Image 1 (cartoon, rainbow, N blue to C red):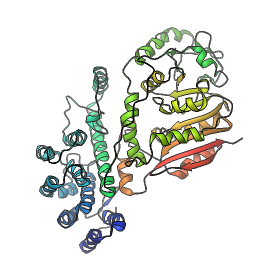
Image 2 (cartoon, helix red, strand yellow; image 1 turned 60 degrees about the vertical axis):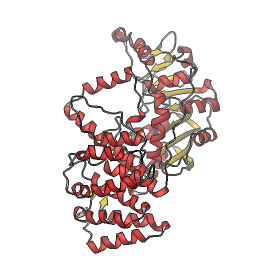
Image 3 (cartoon, rainbow, N blue to C red; image 1 turned 45 degrees about the vertical axis):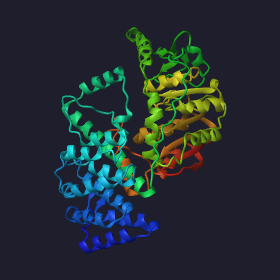
Image 4 (cartoon, rainbow, N blue to C red; image 1 turned 30 degrees about the horizontal axis):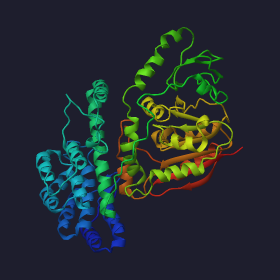
Length: 519
């Protein structure tokens, strides 16, 4: 915990910030923020000094007021983990300025950075829910449905009898669920304990606040934000096309049994010649995440039918590509200005994928957005798509009906040593950060000498406020919070896996890397 700042020091910091030239504004804000707040919580004495911060709102222009409002939001949020009901001393001190915040909101204007900052700050006071929502719903402010639903969700109390979990990011308005998807949500929520429901609800709230806060912080620094949605991948049809064992047999030299590392056979079914394990295959999806041997085989006869049924369900894979992924890039990559576009990613992948002989593996392929780029670059016959998520691979198979897909973990790749001509892992390594070194080691194992490994992932932001907002995202697949990387550790894992970095680049906190397997 930092040492208390004296009132004269805080006064001097506020005065320096208010009068800073534009080019020095961010540095001045950093010093001011550090006097009251850190990523670990409020500094000692922050509650007593918060009144001076609120008072300073009356003497600052709109841009500086926006910075101060974001800082007040950060202070209100510092006690959320320990005081989700809102009775912590710092948050109580911030709340005393509520009348002033609502006055500023009324005059802030439609779509301004100050409006975004005030919406973020006001989202921390659920006990004032009705008053805040009434102030935010005026025609003069013209908040869009995403801002309004984020604010409403952050202020909403948990209803334990009808909890609405997991569908709130980047905003509740972004989700348009059909009956099947609502039914899926209902079933998994029913299986949770009351403690798990409360934990998920609080994580969802913190994630909504983190997105709103990071968006506001970018806007007050840069004047605007872009929230571009990507076009949906073109699909070949409404159903997944069938691919039989032959589609996988052409990669027989590379594919291996995950149970015993034996050679797989493809005579009507996919079965290991060494240990007799049979692996389910349906609609071009080969499930190497599980199998059955001997007497167990009859118990698994319905697995292919299950795959057929799940593959026919409406897929969330396309939704991920069009809405969730661009939102994730804004958070993880600081891409609020669209500095990195899908075309930029495609160009990088085409320019840097240099396979030697052997299959080309699109690892953690998702819904196939970059599998399609690889298909253009190296041809369908060379491609294998792999992911552990069936809905994503179902979307991929619809979009790319000739590309076979493998269901398997990135941590135990079902391929022989030095059997793959190139590997791509795009926007996925951060999904399993504690095991990223294992995944990279596996990639090094299966790559042939001279084969390339193309990688897109993300590092922690340099700015401590951005870094805090990145880490405050708690996705259902990542309940411990997001964990990004330091470049040095990624490069260390590549070296340990026998991979040499040939190119490294990236704006914001993007990390583009091309590495080559050395002999």
